[in-house]
Image 1 (tube, rainbow, N blue to C red):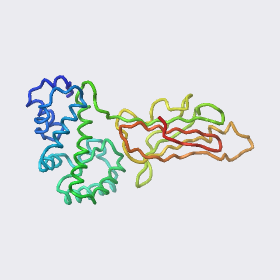
Image 2 (cartoon, helix red, strand yellow; image 1 turned 180 degrees about the vertical axis):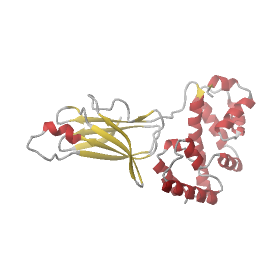
Image 3 (cartoon, helix red, strand yellow; image 1 turned 135 degrees about the vertical axis):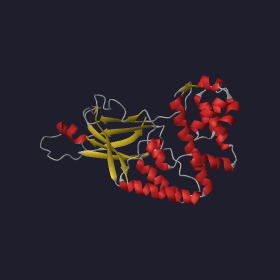
Amino acid sequence: MRTTLDALNAASPEAFAGFAGDLFAGAAWVGERAARARPFPTVAALHAALLAAASDASPEERRDLVRGFPDLAAELAEDGFDRLPAAEAETLARFSAAYRARFGFPFVLCTRRRTREAILDSLEARLSGDTETELAAALAEIGHITRLRLVDRVEGPGPPPTTGRLSTHILDTHGGRPAAGVALRLYVVGRGGRRLLDSRTTNADGRTDTPLLAGTPLRAGRYEIEFDIGPYFRGQVDPAVRNLFLETVPVRFGIDEPEGHYHVAMIATPWSYTVYRGS
């Protein structure tokens, strides 16, 4: 159920602590301590106060906070990844068990901010960390998890950023115009290859009608866009040319800022192309 920032500012200490406890896996003490800083002018300020209360807690309190969060499998199920391929599910279960055995708390990760391929890579990489580093990493991930939960549940001014955007634009510098009608495909890239996420065609402005990804955090990971520029340029070259120099151009890139704007800009001719991160 959604509430408002004004309602939380006016709530009793017990009610405020209970709300915070729902965000922080039952740790109502986070809300009890943050409540002293009310009223909060923005939703972002509320979240910052909650995180400060968690970060300023004793080492044992921080460990207990992390232990209260669900393991990665449960977080994935909440995010709609409960039907992983068998091999990935087995790897996830094995790595998760090894992580808990090594550190004494679950592997906490905000799965809404990573591709499933990047989730497995992150889990494997963090198995070699030390306890203090992993505890700090878990608290940082709890910050991401609770920020998304807070924005989902609280209406008010100044929410913290929680969404990103992926867009593209193709300019035809041979014809001196936007490249309209170019078919493109967006893939996410992982250990086992790549998965198709979307297929689009550029409009009269050389862009897609809507961003390729938007409205949620961008999932950090590896991606690829295939641009079918050959069919677009076919009518601009000598008809005697049977095999165009460029047909399909793959552009592989990474996303590391889930709340950022990634703009894959391309300048193309029948014989060359340049790609850069635009704005």
